[in-house]
Image (cartoon, rainbow, N blue to C red; front, side, top):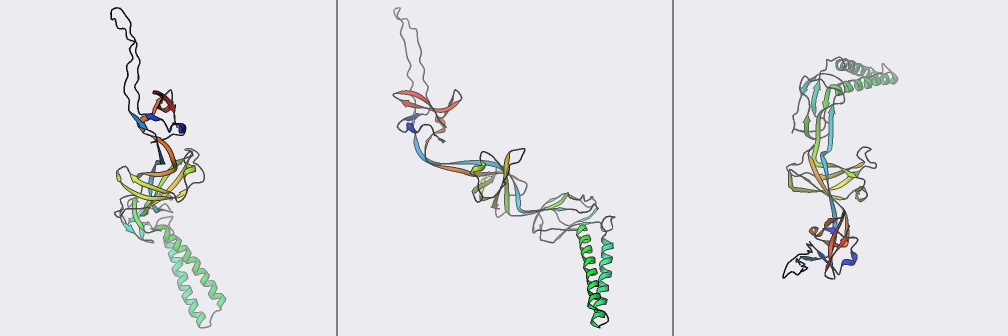
Length: 309
């Protein structure tokens, strides 16, 4: 259906779905006389209707988990253990990858030794303090040294024992045992896929019709009959300088079997606006003539072309 803004005066008319008209001058020799012959062709008519319409547009997008974490290395060391595979469910703090603790850049054993020594010193000083052999000030100084040593050890341990910051499903494992962990490069990806996000790009023409909280419908062309409801949760405030589009994020609950997966392509249908009491005609009535879209209407028994928008 098409919204007709320029034919409000045509309510009393009837839109012609298609018109085929032709006039021909035929030379017929009947005892030497010429006759003009006009062929009349019947056409089908359809009434212009007044209806409430909605304009829905489909956007392409990519899927992500509601929460998604890239597990990256902090130091360039060899991987000695990979403890998960794609599809595994992991909990917050679970150990995923171990790096070489004896490597030149790890400083793990040095930090561990410093921590253990400071721990022994603290225990000895606490005992002396309880006997009244040292002052509170001396005990506080040893406690401070212990805290520093523990922080150094924790940092060294976290650089070689890579854990998951969230609970979720392992969606990517990009390394094997023996590989070098390059700092900043994702080794494993963990995502919470109970809820998903569809990331779409919205053109500047459509962005005025977008708002946070707006309803949306998400589906995949791999399984178009499976459609889920969602809502817009975020719209970027500025356009991408290259594409001149705005990034939008649509949140939705995944299916019970978690059919939607991170990295999949999807389609997102969004109702941009509605229009009450609009003039509408069948799509088949719209034709192109002289680079204008329009319809033929019946006026006084003749087909008259009217431009529409």
